[in-house]
Amino acid sequence: MENPRNLDVLSKAPQFANKTIVFEVVDAHGCNSGHKVGDTFHFDGAGNLLTKKSPDKVCIYALNAASNLIFAAGELIMADVDPNDMRFNRTGCFDVGVKCSG
View 1 (cartoon, one colour):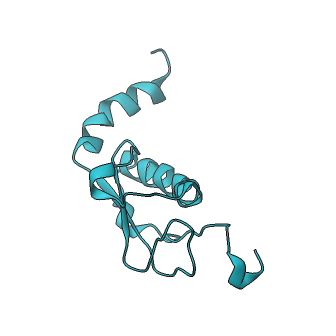
View 2 (tube, rainbow, N blue to C red; view 1 turned 30 degrees about the vertical axis):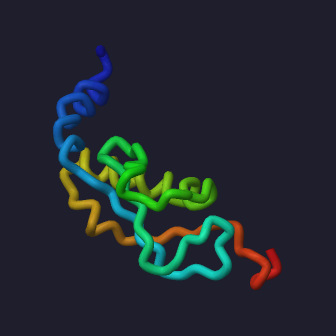
């Protein structure tokens, strides 16, 4: 608690309570989990997957791809910047599938 950054993070915690982070699939080919264009993955402001608002099956590689952007969204929220203004707001699964020689 002696670190001012910790106090700052704690003071901004309520800002995360009403936030939802949504990822939308914009391209998909032969996904093993069946993800397709338009599917959405919902996370609360703390980065927890909201399973009732997400597909029944969620690919671990999709979650991995989302993690850095969830962290970046949190940093923007703490800096009082709208995370929707994030410049680099796309990510991708590294499992490129059979079609791309994966």
